[in-house]
Length: 484
Image (cartoon, rainbow, N blue to C red):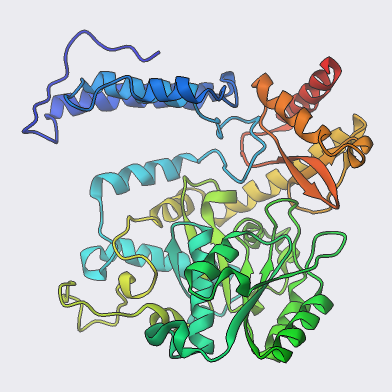
């Protein structure tokens, strides 16, 4: 429980900054609380009890009509987050690509909040824009793009990056689309995704105006990779129906099983039929930063564009999506617009205002989380992080198999789908087991259907998850199973 000091904090409704002494007191107490959480997160239950009425009553406990003291307000928020949240920083969280954020990213979010740079116009935040440009440029090179061709933008997340890819593909295929919209297209645009792709691509088709039924789902093989022959057959069928194939997405690390599409044959088909090739590497793309494992995504440089989420594997706070492309003119062709009220101070310079370059207009300095992380850890540190987590995933597989569990997926990435052999005949067994693990508060896992089997799913997302953590998960599974 947060302790409210007896001395009242100095604040008046005419001073939204508070006075310097008050700010210092609040910062010190808040840092103490956050440091305590950072050090003690593993002592908390990983997941909360989900009682909606109780949670709503807690949220409504303090009034909005009149102010409460900063101490009471902060104490209320911290208590609420401790009691009613899945603690993703916990080393026993084996979840959905929500890692424990590393300290440089936390510092970056704090700096960004204080300086509050406006990222719409280059002239308003030249350091911030150029820092993001450097990260984009160097990431593009890591993915294999020639440096002069690299372009891109930070996004709110992978969903926005995937939608950006579709909009770029539509604008390349139909130059009149940006102005005239879908009514200027005389054929039905269609795009192709694997059965294991992220559902944000379906949403992207709907919001782009071409409709969700424009998405063609391509069959996957036994290891959840898109079948190139099935892709080719679907394209031919669409051409016969007078449709206009626009884009195909190769998934480089699927959410459920960590499958990596073989992008080479997909790239050949995309080139043959004139499709925009997009690589959704929101998660698995991080191996591009690894000297040992970058070969897992060989051929990704053939993609016209790439989605990468820094807030997934490289441990920066949510959210830090990135869109990369090897076509340096396509973002401007897709999003460029002029507005009389926007700043013109940099009008004579060879710079690009971010608002002309992406879906977003005003936005925060998202890229600082990555820029500061790279300054403090370097590419070398991220290489080490990725290698260590892959090794921890391999350890988890070995320990599960040693305890008699069956592994149901095949991936080099640290995602493990597992269960008992009888799960094949009992579809509800995995969810029953998962719920018992969550109720224990000792770990967070999920359920994913792969190869027709509802399997338990554990993903190494936390740089603090180690050999002891893995042994703890296997022990928890055994104890929960034994209790029945």
